[in-house]
Image: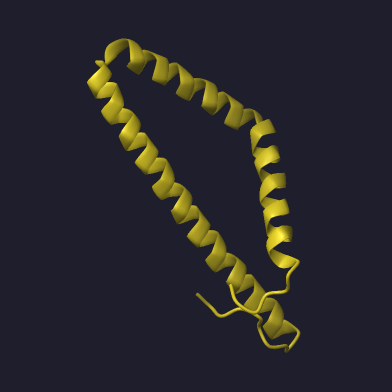
Length: 98
């Protein structure tokens, strides 16, 4: 993001941190994590070390891919929001559309 005020990136990071804390406290998320942990324990008891290693590699790749996808969607949404606000207030947008 070019031409952004210096304060905007720390403000965005602060919001990410706030949302992370919120999600960690959400009861449905806690339930889903517990259920996921249960499935993982079942897999560990069932799979060989080699199979479990392959599963872990796949999971690492999937998590990174999904995180990058969400970040890209967030950035596009943020840029779109900035452009809407700039349009409403008839000011030049400080960031290009992605």
